[in-house]
Length: 368
Image (tube, rainbow, N blue to C red):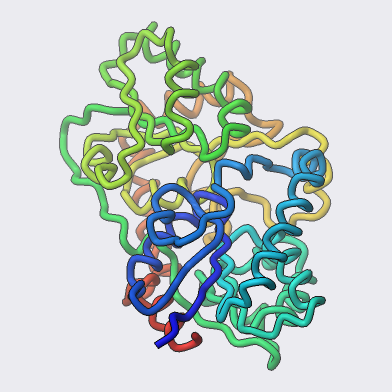
């Protein structure tokens, strides 16, 4: 029997984790998979056209500056998809890049099924994307049940799969921990923007002789960059890209300083108290201030409509502000305990009773 052909397009780390866990649940004796992904997922692909490390832009200004590169990538991928006429296209996260790829395909009369895993955050900004996506995609897999209200159109199907934090385990609560974790971001651009703040925190830890090592979980292609940038740190620093061992290492994490994004939700699910930081280009921040409908960066803060997890972001991100909240997180047990208590009261809003990867794999196999 002729193998079915799937094309997967995954251009960022949060999507890569989803991609890997879904693809490993698919029988590859019957299906051939090509596309774009990261290092973990590539073993499931027959042909890999780009790696997620080639998608480095964040923010409106950075994306505009990289526009020519992305247009060329979309054109290349469009040609490969049309030439091979895949039976199913799976787009994961990266809604803007994927939308433009799918739009090009539909203009060329590509009629096979196309699904999007992780809906664009139309509830936060650019609500008009909901109808635009509905006109191009056959189905959208939703991480949050409330998103069904935004994609309630007869021209598209939706499947609520739940959030991937379903699989993450709470760290073991104990009296003595070894690490303070620094999550610097999954892109080199994020590391470049935030590193000076992490650097100042390391100086604070070492100068005050705070008895913790630093743990930096990261991706393989970022290890050397981080090693170079932390080469003069006095605090013992453990840098790891061993994703399969992260659960073990996180068991020893006391508190975390976390780059905003999926990582902050993962840290929350692990029940590690944290401070979230982020820095957009100043021009991007000014533009988004007038477009974004939500006030907070963390999803749990958005859902709860209160500051469960402290955020120091954009123009508020200064060394003084960060040091102040870091000291509070480090020294106040009540502050840490209240954060974890509030986190656990809102986590049920984003979780399902079944693995989102199992739900996704079953649905994909029914579509092909």
